[in-house]
Length: 242
Ligand SMILES: [Ca+2]
Image (cartoon, rainbow, N blue to C red):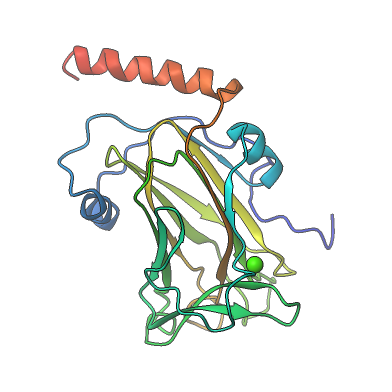
């Protein structure tokens, strides 16, 4: 498989199918800030995907997609609603549409000190009840022994409307070809945070975000039966006062 992008460590398809609680630290603070919500009641069930085909199969209906090809080079994107109820942010100074040498346009952050400090991150805020979200991480290169590329994985966090969240470690690839990440949940997704990988030279490995996809109501699929079971367990737990 030399020369083939292997963006995620696990095999393609559904990688995770269980509720997780992540109630500590900045993740909870951000989720609470996004929601203005009180303590979580249940834990969202979710499945994550590392190929567009498997994500689309789980969604089961056409998704809204933003490719950014219609935006002008350098367009300011910080806080811009680029899909209904979806906007992006960053802890870097600028968030712009960037055009690479192949003509691909995507969202890219730069400026400030976050990247030099190895703390560069992107965020998405969702204000409509989408239960499915996907995107491509662009320019995410990881070459063993090459210090100008990623030295490890980046960290993706998905925040759900019930104040729970899920974390994923995502690795780059030798070619820098886009790395797909998708999630489908049984609760609305209210936010996402992508913390770039650390670069061997220090700082963060520069990535961009492209092809953002959302869908409101996925059709029931095989994985949904598992989520239904978990939801039932959650109800029982609540009735028992757990
Ligand atoms: Ca694009």
